[in-house]
Length: 428
Ligand SMILES: [Zn+2]
Image (cartoon, rainbow, N blue to C red; front, side, top):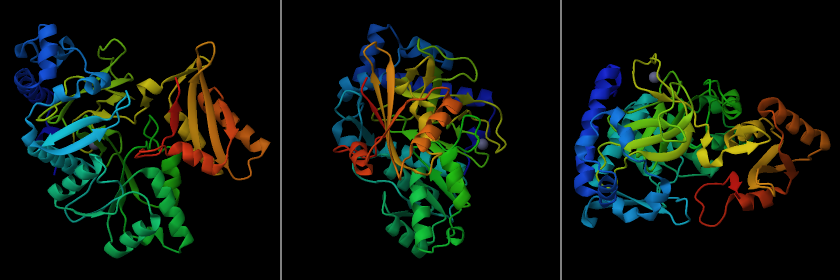
């Protein structure tokens, strides 16, 4: 199931995107209270933006605006809204996302072609290891996508290795949809209970939430650890509620493929201008074909690099490399710019580290400080020294490290109402 457009020429892809962009401009002009205001104040008419190059004429949309004017983004009457989703806002309150029946169909299509990209076929059975309720979009998207593709899906939900294995052994799924670090827990459980991982019938895992690869697409420590115990293919998928679209890796595993019929992707610098080819910038998206809450030039906050070389899988679409980090979590530390994921990668190299949390703060002279709290079995001075050396070798800087009780760190990781564990506490 590869849509024609993914194998079309770059010129054909651009033409299709521009047709859909023109439709979007008219739609926003007629239906979006928020964008009507923006267009008025910037003297923008639907005809002002006809090409991808014209997009820079429109201002960007920020997470703060989405939060502040949440209801003004909704383009349909309430009786057309089917599903309500929330996503964590930056100003405290969650942001509401509404989806119409057509939006749910679009979501299903997106996930079906994303699964297909990762090699999932109609005969496959997926085991869903993420939450499907609690106002989350992702779990529902996976369910709808599997259904659209005609594949089977087992909704086990997050956590509980025992139940996951019971389900794997009973229903023989072929793919897992999972946060990759949870695979380590499944591996540990299997080893403790004499379950043979490599005869479990699992071919691959579609992995969300954490990177599997370094920027050159080699496996990072987490992925290496998984693969050394369990011979399965790991595919990264990157998505968000605001995008309602996924960038999923194909068989070549060289970045997540863009679905041009669903979203326009720009990579922007600090001045909201497109970065040069192959440069890192903030992913900024314009959704195509969304009815309830379409977004124009929405800044995702994620720092990424685009790859445009032809992919051996036959798709000509752009690919996004692993997310380097959240823009607002960028740390300037002793003259080096770094993002938390680079630090996770280093900490994951030490099997003695049981869990950790990274605190970022401003010090008295206004520069950034990093404090890493770790829990480890029998942490010796030498061991802490090794971690620091590893930081220096990989990142050129060595943050402060403190040893804490495992339970204490767990408590920090799961504050009230949190749907996923925190790894970074940003106090700036
Ligand atoms: Zn490909």
